[in-house]
Amino acid sequence: MGSAAPQGGTQAVDRAAALVDLVVRADDPVSFTELSDVTGLARSTTSRLLAALERTDLVERDPSGGYVAGPLFALHAALHDPWPQVARLARPVLVEIGARTGETVHLGVARGETVVHVGQVESTFLLSARDWNEVDVPAHCSSLGKVLYAFGVLPLPSGRLERRTDHTVCTRDALSAELAAIRGTGYATAIDELETGLSAIAAPVAGKDGVICAIGISGPTARLQDRVDHIGRLLVEQAASLSALLGRPTPRAAGHPRARHSSTTKEGAA
Amino acid sequence: MGSAAPQGGTQAVDRAAALVDLVVRADDPVSFTELSDVTGLARSTTSRLLAALERTDLVERDPSGGYVAGPLFALHAALHDPWPQVARLARPVLVEIGARTGETVHLGVARGETVVHVGQVESTFLLSARDWNEVDVPAHCSSLGKVLYAFGVLPLPSGRLERRTDHTVCTRDALSAELAAIRGTGYATAIDELETGLSAIAAPVAGKDGVICAIGISGPTARLQDRVDHIGRLLVEQAASLSALLGRPTPRAAGHPRARHSSTTKEGAA
DNA sequence: GACTGATGTTTCATATGGTGGAACCGACTT
DNA sequence: AAGTCGGTTCCACCATATGAAACATCAGTC
Image (cartoon, rainbow over the protein chains, first blue to last red):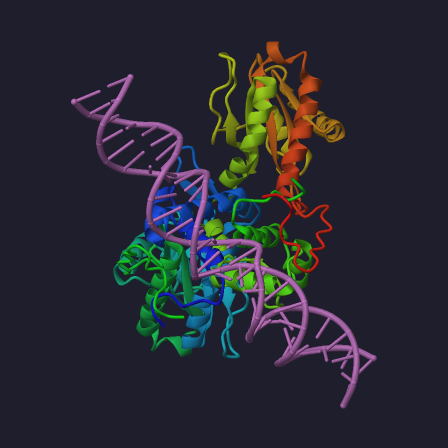
């Protein structure tokens, strides 16, 4: 259990994969030297591996000579909508939240003027919300919607604010006050605001350029009312870990001084 | 120099990359056996390589056991809009068209109710169109727009059809007649319809699920009027090759019987 | 237009890491 | 229980990947 597990017989592929990983996670071109340094590979090895990866379309050189994700990644991105991919990546986090709260968990994004749910994990309780996937709800009475409003992902509503229940926030002033509060606490709530007896809590998820979507839970007010802050914090924490996943590089090469002198290839283990 | 070039010292990585390639291009999960068969690798080797690729997030197993593109691809797709990626892949084709016609080449997609240009290659002539990237033009007087209408990518216009010049198609009947004609010939034209003296020709590009965007050229009517059909055919042909790139798998493993007996690893050359 | 330094690439002897056949395993059929 | 399919693990062998060092290449500099 040292730093690098002495994996079973695939050094070359592992190393190549590490290079691809670095290149794909970085959002701007990565120089040869940087790759060589960060991975700690000999320059010759780096060169050979990168040549192979380029030949096979996994990486590509941009005009300036740096390496960027290759055509195969472009192809994949060209053929698949981004949100389902975000949903895929978020799944483990949603599941975790589901396990810790027992409630139905949602992943919501802005589309046009409303929130749509692109991922969901079912409640373990019998009484729970329906499948909201692809259904859009008025954002001002949804916790996800409020988060997206609060962080500028969703344009503030221009029309009238529909009154769904008598707890619904219907005035523009009340709404913007609440949005400010949300930016303060880090999470949003919607208690009996969309439908009487239905509550929801949500927190923002950031991508590389700020907030891009929100995760939250929903369930009967009766079950949630005493746990609002607890769940709110949980969501904030989990949202942060998801943000980290979607954000900057930093994964592997965090602490290792990794100063491979001369021929210190083997890491002790066997 | 048999079928496979005796690449310079990266067998393992090349093979692993071939696996990734197959998995990513296929749009549904690929079974272990299929991968092993198609690549012609020993089952043990396939297993080892796939294990490594899975460990490194380049592939992933779906619940049913098949292999699909891994989290790293999801991450890339999650962080990058699809259209710029399509534009990247299309670049070589656009350049080719630019070289063969000398005119400005465009890649247009539907966004909402209009066409937007997501890729462009400049004319070699001095007199040419401006940079249309991200500018949207009325679709009914654009050749790209007509193509997108004709193949159902862009919803037929509901409002009035703006008359930009006296050649603009302004009636719904005239438009649908023209769209039928476009489906017949395979390409669309817009001569002096957006602006007097400006002509354009365009053809549809298909992805895995039918037409997704269009490529076309534009330039002065004076230079284009005698070459309309010639250029139309060129566009259709190039669009087809781009469609192939964006479509189904089929690339490498075409003919090789690839029956590696015992230890016939070396392919003769050195 | 020769020095210098920084960045990549190619060469080559070496032993490490990858290879494939066969044994093995677990799940499903018959 | 015996047989088949789909996949993984073992292991002896040697082909393959490896890294040091030599070799290119280019951008400044004097």
